[in-house]
Length: 160
Length: 160
DNA sequence: ATATGTGCAAATCCTTTGCATAGAA
DNA sequence: TTCTATGCAAAGGATTTGCACATAT
Image (cartoon, helix red, strand yellow):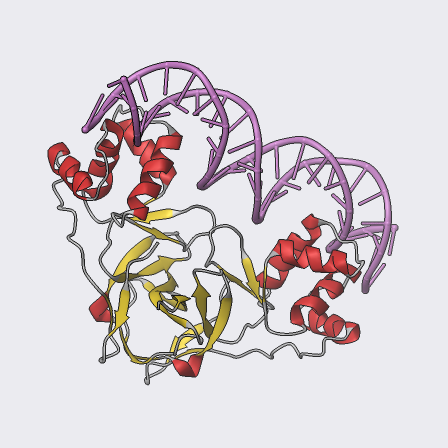
């Protein structure tokens, strides 16, 4: 689900290879090309979903994707939305986030980063990697190696 | 869901108050007393579930709890298991963990700590706080303050 | 032409809920 | 007695699945 990670001598956690970020102005042709480069056949529905998802780094649930497509007058089945998002995730085009047990969230920002989760509003925002630095990290259990790190900073409305 | 947290000047994240850890040998009387001290009426079912959960720091799903009780010849309804675990979580006796979107996981280790998640086996193990130290932390978004930090180190079977 | 996707509805799985009964204070 | 918890079964919601039909190469 997550990419390949590596802990540098500086204890900065960084992705082993930062794959290209889907470009912001996601034209249909552009998205189709991106999908092809990931070995994904660019069908109409996949390109539509891709255009939505890759238009900007964002956090979307399957329901949310379906809703936005419907609002744009594009008819896609729920099954296809799930199939497509799962496929994108499997191929590393989006990342699946588990902050909310209620529903899965797909993050179109696949570069290494962490999250703020507002426990009052449910809002999810990105934390850029440079904002965090470890001076000490645990050793993985015997026989295992690090595959990724997920950090969620739970924040709440400031009191008083 | 999580306790009250505070970032010290040393950038070590620590709980504002570490509440007493439920003792390991969790006798029925002991558990009943513990529940009372948390304002929870110690019914038979709650004490049974408490004895199971507090016997040692562990990660259990609702299904798992029900299964173990059933194996011990104790009949408790699924609804009561969920009610009880949610109650314990609300009162801070256990912590709910979101590593796996499949099912909720309740952690009877409520002291501040993080997790290794083995993506091959699904196994969850604790990472003690002293194993991690930040030398830089992000500032929470405007109008919010830190309420907690969840860190999951995804590990996998060592290659080769 | 052949392999691959899509849509629909039903199935699945986890979790919650409503309500009558049983138990705690 | 009076409030609260329990159990059952049914409801709820997110996600997957099976299969016939449509589409890509």
